[in-house]
Amino acid sequence: MSIKIVFPGELVAVSEEYMAGEGTYEEEGDIFAAQTGELRLDPRDKVARVKSCNPPVELNVGDIVLAIGEGIRPTMAVVKVEAVEGVERGITGETEGTIHISKISEGYTEDIKKELRLGDIIRARVIQVKPSLQLATNEPPLGVVRGLCTRCRLPLIKKGRSLYCEHCERSEPRNVATVYDALMSRGKG
Amino acid sequence: MVKKLKLIDSKGLRMDGRKPDELRPIKIEAGVLKRADGSAYLEWGKNKVMAGVYGPRECHPRHMQNPAKAIVRCRYNMVSFSVDDRKRPGPDRRSTEISKVAGEAFSSVVFGEQFPRTSIDVFIEILQADAGTRCAGITAASVALADAGIPMRDLVAACAFGKVQGKMVLDLDKEEDNYGEADVPLAIIPRTEEIVLLQMDGSLTTKELQQGLKTGIDACKQIYQIQKEALKRRYAVILEEEETTEGDA
Image (tube, rainbow over all chains, first blue to last red; front, side, top):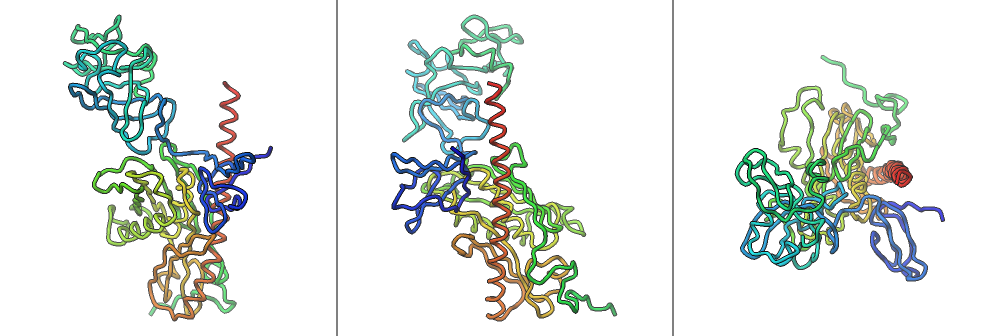
């Protein structure tokens, strides 16, 4: 099947035949494209959609994201979501998320400060988008992917199950992601 | 005494050889900036314009957020070397006004309801100016908005018309703008012919304005085709990139 590319404002279907789906809008009985992209007319459900070639990035439940620790509270951590993993474009909408103490690590967490500190970059999964953004790091590949020393603020290296500062010669507890080193070498991302 | 500038010759042609209802050559390229979500570069006669779009992204300062929809913010800026005499950098009365009216033109086409509390930031940089820069800027920014994948009713196409030595002409250049009697920038939604921007510098009779609007709208439709061509080329490039990455994997 040949691909049909449509532009905003282009007539793609009529409302007698199709419903206006994503990337389209209806006006006076006609359906027009709202985005530049590929036209997809669903013959079974009778929905006209336009698949955008550069859609805005919206967070969905299940997405793996990279976030920075912004606040530590007794029962939750506040983080700022910076990017969806593997996507260069910035995020549309709410970027401030929270991680409840019960979702921060796989086991029981006594103290959040032993799992995550301010300025750390974490890899997390989105578990709720509305009404508020909730994240979780209770899986082995999730957790801190770049930790900073609380004393000298230099990046820490992974040593066993915790992180170690070569400058201060001391180690710090964290919920370290299994992919810590792999992501460290790539930087912030 | 300096001889009066002859803007229209005996054959009815203009200084650059154009007919009264002829546009200057326009060239648009979409997707020129790597870090912007959407971008476009436009050359319109001697005008050179770069437009970048960011967002929809979280709106700062927060008090500007609209809980019901995305806001469109626009900044029109002329770089210091865009005109003969150095333009003092920074916002001034003129560019603040153009930013406002251009932003309002885009607000009327963008579907902001899908992205509450966010802002869509449009930046228009005039690199080289030769009259009609606000129309050139709006035309470029509208391509950039479409390149950014922002849902909208239609592209916005803009063009100016005016009166020079008693004759109605389309798309004034710098001399015509400076020594002519009127300059009317116009931006429309091509499909419905709704007017989203109309300003006037100088004076016209009602009849002249109506005649000008007619040629202006036709010109905007021509520009609309050029905008679509630019997006088509952009899409072809994206498809190619996708194919090569899929081939690698």
